[in-house]
Amino acid sequence: MRYPGAPVSILQKNKKLAAGIGVAAVAAAALALGAGTYAAFSDTEAGPGGTLAAGTLTLDITGSPTATTQLFSASNIAPGYDSGPLIFTIENTGTIDGTVRGDATVTENAGGELDKQLRVSGNCPGTPSNFSNQPVSILTTGFNAEIDAGDSVVCTFRFTFPHAVNNNDAQGDSVTIDSLFSITQRTT
Image 1 (cartoon, rainbow, N blue to C red):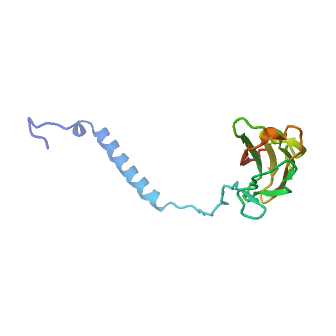
Image 2 (image 1 turned 180 degrees about the vertical axis):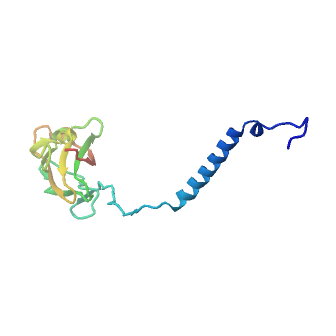
Image 3 (image 1 turned 120 degrees about the vertical axis):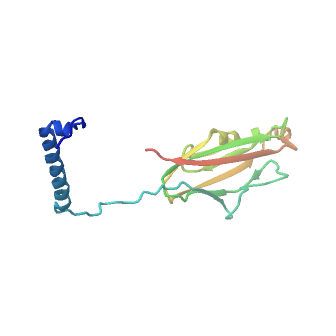
């Protein structure tokens, strides 16, 4: 019942709109109830996996006798000196194949000639591999060798001070040889 002057709502004015809203509400409620009871078969399984671990490159250099960090040392050498065989091992104790690079410096005290008169012979797998009776400066040309993981190479050197007419130019001189080896992953 409507009282004169009372406001009229939109739903009272339009009965079709009210009926449509009611039907939509009932449909939404039915859909919500039905969705909760709907089921389908499903299954879950673990897929294949794995572990990735980085390898290592580890360089180990030992002299003979073992644990020698100074391969040779001699004082008061004279013409005719022969160091005998000096042996050291370069080992890749890592898990990745590598390429070893060796570099040496030869330093002679100022004004001397001993570095020009000393000779070296060597055998070390790599480049250069074998050399005989060369000036010690050949050691500064560098050394490269491929060493597989777990493998090693053995190097042998011999230093000599041969007799020569200019031996007096080397009196009182000294020569220092330093080396540095590094290993990098082989890419081929």
